[in-house]
Length: 442
Ligand code: UGA
Image: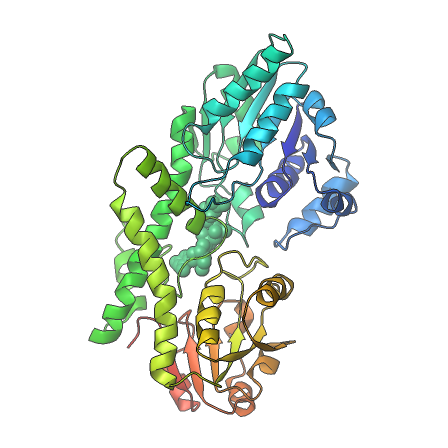
């Protein structure tokens, strides 16, 4: 039985660990954070992700997964070691690789037999080779001549549907340098392999690039459609129908063409900037990626303009915000468009009542640290509409798709409704007495 250790029990590490244990492997997840490890051993996940709690409890009960802060023992025990630590953004937009390199040093320091080292963290092309070198240097310092394989195995899961994405992957990308490592990785993912999930076997550099290229392309799709929203508003076209029409062309595809307040999250904003930085380092002009990033900043700002143009002066205005997380089904607030939009509105004198089904705790931390005046963190969407001049529908949680609009309208003191996810129909909203604004639908 192959033993797997996963270093880093954050989003990617935890979901990978839990899913691989569910595939039947013996998995140890490692993290420096004692509190998180303690909770995980009790079956309490530190993040909200649909389906995660059940799978965690099931595999803890079956003793296929355990959590520890002891990296030494986990490295020594494992046949395969996944690196799944964070690669946050440096001030210059580049990916910060401190955590990845620190783990590489530790692996080299504690390794006592042949291992396969798999990088799952999103890292700039070339990092796999650097990790390999660090491990070699550590081994040489210990005068050990151990064999090991380096693999890049990027992750493509989305927050909010991470468990589903892991178990129904469109593809598994494996960047490797030996047949033995490729065979071992196919074995790790045997459940997917026998389900005929396509496997792409490439070199390490290509695998690293596939990850950045995929995220940058998806971000570009979103920025492309968002850039057209203003033009649609001015010309009478409907962006949703434009996207539908485009998506009917099999070469384009309908996914990731939903116009909105701009993309956010822990990946697209960070990865597009990191890719731009890699391009600059290599003196390659990545003009499309640059435009994608700019269009996204502009889109967030344009949401504020839509509100200001509709409402006139924003000073003293009160707005109820439905949804704060960067997307539905997650409690994650990282780079959420709500942050920039509320900040900008606050600078013009607006106050808020806010509600999000899962992200309130994370939002509180960020809002308290900043300058966003919150009248109340509300219990539900109706509470958030009480005595408000306007509503912003910011995140497309399912429960906001079937709001009791009469109830909302009755609660409000004004009648503006800004639907930044294009959920409602203009006719119905006008009929209900709202001054209704959306994105890319005139
Ligand atoms: C993204 C990728 O989709 C995953 O494949 C990848 O593994 C992940 O980054 C990562 O690198 O770890 P994630 O950021 O969790 O996943 O969420 P997405 O569903 O991709 O949404 C990202 C942002 O784009 C959200 O703010 C969402 O609201 C926005 N979006 C998405 C749109 O505005 N329109 C769309 O049509 C789709």
